[in-house]
Image (cartoon, rainbow, N blue to C red):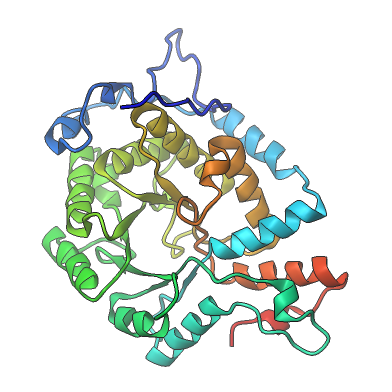
Length: 353
């Protein structure tokens, strides 16, 4: 393997605890073939055993760094770039019991053309709002979305593994994923078994992610939802990130959007640092998706600053970073129009009809 340049960025890993130096992140993977699942699995502790090779997180440093990055300002030209980039990174989502084919088709139409000018607004060519990255739906609507998005590069993502709870027998959750793939899904957003994780059964969580990834193969990208709001603390988020990365996730994702708190800057930073350390150890680049609760352009720009400061410019692409926040698009468009016209428009002029 060619020599890799390390992503040298600040870290919130605890430097010292009770006089000991924490382990090198993912150091146990040195010399291990990631394709050898059995060998990787042996590195994960058995149920009831402590996972001593995952370094602890300094919660104070983590929160301080997020607060500092949240105060960073960017200039107008950079803000226009950031707003358009954030639109490109959006996964427009509808995951409601009242979803219909017509609702999904309208969502897909907006994914293709996010901006429709009203009277007095800049024209579409001036605003230059790009299409979004993906549309995320229940498996029932995959075929509808694929048909509505023909001729575009917009991906169709489907939730799987008994989203959002994951509380079904695994063979049914795996069948759920395989059916979605047969329907044509480009991406699968799976939920981990939080109950198993909280009981310390890390190998079970690893096994389930690995089997879902095997079902996805190389064509279908797998996003692994940790549901960070249910995991308890930052150390748990770090451990869950390790499991997902070692099991073959293409993206790791904060939340389903159905549990509060959903995405937060500190939880996202823990996951970004895990991605960075995994890349440094293995050379495999994995994407990140904060989801739930990101509603304003200001919030989105904070996440992009955090991303750039932690992982660098190579991750500033929809192939490696997504926003799971449909309502965010309204404010991104509103702020984009404000930057170009000098005046704000009413919120409802950008609403998804």
